[in-house]
Length: 345
Image 1 (tube, rainbow, N blue to C red):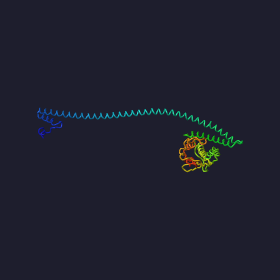
Image 2 (tube, rainbow, N blue to C red):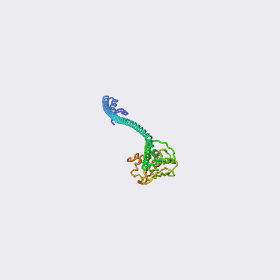
Image 3 (cartoon, rainbow, N blue to C red):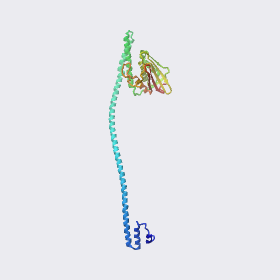
Image 4 (cartoon, rainbow, N blue to C red):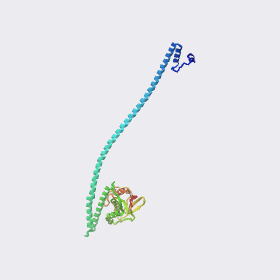
């Protein structure tokens, strides 16, 4: 109210910081210059104080901002530092693994060379077995056959000895053949075709003729077999020959061996069943029976070294089938060969 009565009507006070500037202008209009200067000084003083206070606030504001920027940069530096440490650790690990892998590769290279040498040695050995050794044993067997077929009479003891030599020779040849088949049947691609079942069993009976006659045994092949089987002819002959030969070999002393081969077929699979009346197998020995060299000890050439069933399993594996063994100790053994659909036609 005092300002409105003292100062002229219509005076604009908005351009001044506070009332002191307004008073200074009013006194100047009234002609009171001293009073106008006095209040102008007061106004300027107030302005400087406010300006200083404002500057201080702005400085604090900018300082806080700079602190935040510095802290953010510090955090970024810490992150970069940790990243660099992790990268260095990762590089050291990669370098360590690279050097270790280099050493492993070098060792593998040496072992591969050694394995190649061993395979070459085994191949050379297999050629010796298949040619030189078998040729010698064949000669021994043929000589015994010639002596047995001669017209001149010989004593029963001599005849028995010659028959034993002939049997051992035949079993030695079978053993060598089994070893050769075992070596060649491991992870080997074989050519397959449709082979007549009668042809396979005819070859098997011919190869085992001496064993069958010597043991006074019988091999009965069922009449309802399919016409053909899809597979490798040589390996299939070896498969059935091994299984039937085992059935004759492990016979009971007081019983003539009888081997029955039958076929069970349906839409899903075909199954060949080979059943004998031999000595059978103890239950706890069945699980490991198809492992190579499963015989616990080498008794004689006639008993073998446990390759027969292992080779048979390898052959049936090559033909995408399955081999199962069941037995009743002291009575019989049954071998089941289960083949996928389309194997038999």
